[in-house]
Image (cartoon, rainbow, N blue to C red; front, side):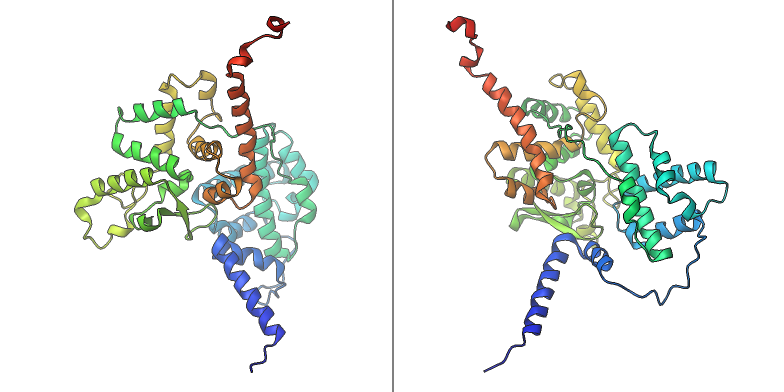
Length: 366
């Protein structure tokens, strides 16, 4: 009779748990987070100087695994934020500022003070947290716990996700068929509505990512470069997507690179569409839609991302439970899904006010 060592059992359980987490969040992200909890000796790093130049820190950051694991859109945003930060530091700390000089709570507070919009401040704070965390660990083998209080990221609890009404969606789908690239753009909208995927995920869909047998598509999830996650899709939307692929690439199915072709492309599948192409297309449809009020056509109102919100909202309206929606949206935390409850509550208030008895006035009854 075999004798089992408790230590071996525990190790096997731990290994299985780690494997499950790596599958869920992606190996790169999992390894990066795990690294923070495991003390390592910097044997390959020479003694760090306290006088690290800010430009050297910036160069290191742009070559780090932390930065390279970000989505392309996030990389571009952080490059832009770095340029702004460097210019500000040179203005107030001289032409060759040092990292320690600008990484103080006082200086960072002064840098963020003029920013009034919460969303903009959060983006700047997120960039600074990412940058300083990486360079402090690399150059000084320390963390930025104290600076995190200065670089807080606040959530605007009053800002609801913006979703399209069903009448608005009907008009968008009608108008898109009348414009240029109607077949492609019609398929794009249906892909959003049938899966709830993000813009960056749709752009990088390749022919091999379609899995009809499991009624799903494989997408490169947020912050998981190179790692694909399965995402369920409604059968009608999947049929439309497959029909478009057959129409677009039906003549090259025998080509060696056929599985790697990007589904939505303007250069024969060699590279994906630029995100601005889809953003402009949706913005144009919103602008001409008569069912959408002018107030909802302003910036930061209805947009491409509203199609993802619509996917979630109408699942909730159909009676799908919140935990299932969380999995379909591929949210890491349930709190990210719960924001739709507030929007759904607003829909219920409008619905109850349409009840015939709601039109009666109390004065008419007494």
